[in-house]
Length: 143
Image 1 (cartoon, rainbow, N blue to C red):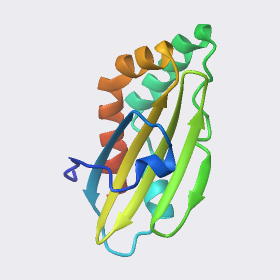
Image 2: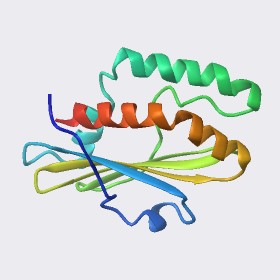
Image 3: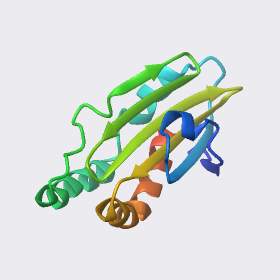
Image 4: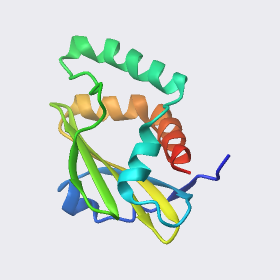
């Protein structure tokens, strides 16, 4: 298993999601030559069963609050270059971006969030322990 490290986000979070109030990033070593599209495919392909179960539970719990279910096909792609893929999903409680970058044999998965209201703050607080586990697992998938 690859070592996944928590790192400062390697992207300008404000340019990707102005007014964001949360960001974290996880990095893993990868073979040179993997581009952002391939790293993104690897990150989200073969999600651990426990992560899929948590996402299904999340969808059931947030439905009564009027929040959108997680996109079944993954986060929509906003922009893509060989070095960076930016995906995003906006909802009434928060907006989020997932950024996969590759440089010098390292892939980094960054999550950026802008909360809109008390529901967004409560939601992020509730999911944070699970977010960290899922983000690390998806970063490890890249390798």
